[in-house]
Length: 304
Image (cartoon, rainbow, N blue to C red; front, side):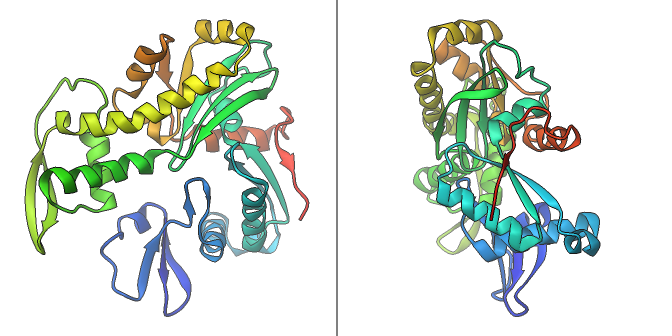
């Protein structure tokens, strides 16, 4: 997420700071997400965001030195979408760009023994995509992907509030609802949560119970379950047997949704658990790959 000053054509904030500006900016500032559903939605802003991060973390000299950049990308990205990631990084100052499949990066970040000849399933639920990969011998044997992720849960909460209560809430409020009381299983605590919204041009306060959100969130989660089932349908029997022993690992921000692991286990009959640090798995994996000189051989060198 970035905030762009349209008068100066420059980024004034990025990350969490920019996200908190959603719906609160004057006309000359736009808060937007340059990456949507796992692909580049705004080329120039995406490049500006990367350069902003480069400069804020390592200073101007890093950009001038034109570093090698590793990017985690969805397996389902088309060749055109992959090319756009490469060009964005190049415009931001990268000399070389290495692409790493997100699920493999996450597996490395969780210290999963990916080189073993045993099948493992990892499901990465990102902001715009969900990918279920079966990993063996250091690579992804197969991956099933859908364009559904954490933002889809946010949108479904916004739509639910509009239909049920006739009020409008923003993306930030929807995400807070998801994090604080969102669940796809029976809630242990059904204490209401007060939400500040807009109705007919006036501010209102609405009491929302965790049980109210269960069904709309469960409908979205059903698509993730079907994605996992689709992966199993293409998985060789020997690897299915391995996965039944090792279980299904969830990672990515969407994996934090309360009860999602229990729902998947209930629907598939296979032990399912969330990674210890699901939000960090992918980037931690990229760090390991960089520091090890890509001893796993999973980064794809690209030519511009």
